[in-house]
Length: 325
Image (cartoon, rainbow, N blue to C red; front, top):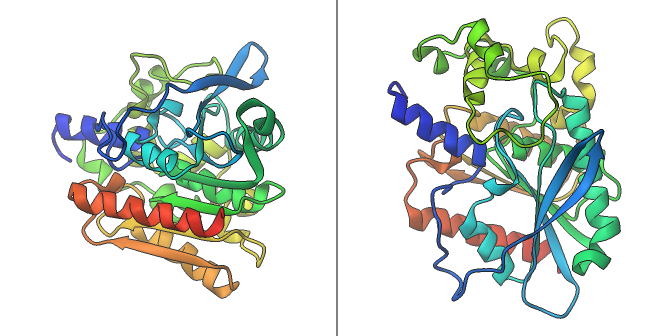
């Protein structure tokens, strides 16, 4: 990713947390789904935090998938859900609720996790009346940082989701991949501290501005190994215990939900080993899980043929069908 166009394309995939963020039409549905209905599920001061609700065409109550976007907790918004995956879920009879949350570094990780928990509570408590979902059949799904947040719902919300799907996510935010300068990202011209600080601000936001360079702040964090400090507000070397409530891999018990992990072996942003380690921990605790390994797949399944991406999505639908019956 040495050239600028390649980096821009990568950041677009990262912020969407999806395998095919550029796809605009679904080959799997005869008609486009109805536009989503946007709801405000939470207010923090004057800030409205929103969710887009997509509903399947049915008169019955239906299971729901809560989607959490990626973007390193720094970028992205609820519009980032992949259209083809969304349409497949709608066609299979699932409502899809794609949520926003406050973004770092203006908001630190504990408050971001609170937003995810509040969104889940809102879906469960208000969803039956607002959009006819079955509150006892909820799955959580997300990509990249959204996959990380998805994994946190496995131990931070109650009642727990019926199933989790983590696309190229991670369970340990203190590991050296995030807390040390990253060799891959340091191949890019180094971002200065001044530039990094200039592209973020002081105001709390849940949606990035239409024109923004927040990816530069992320690049700075990865080049310097500062992501845990900048996002969580703690030093993993000096305050390891402070990360206990934030790391899914430290919180797996027998009560953790059935989980599907999807990860490419050539992911240069989130190491494939992150999903391997989480799968091993679930295995140790006797939790039902599956790891779909995409050989030579990059982050967001970059470099993977379309047919293979769609086949992976089909496996996701099958997994949801098993656990949201």
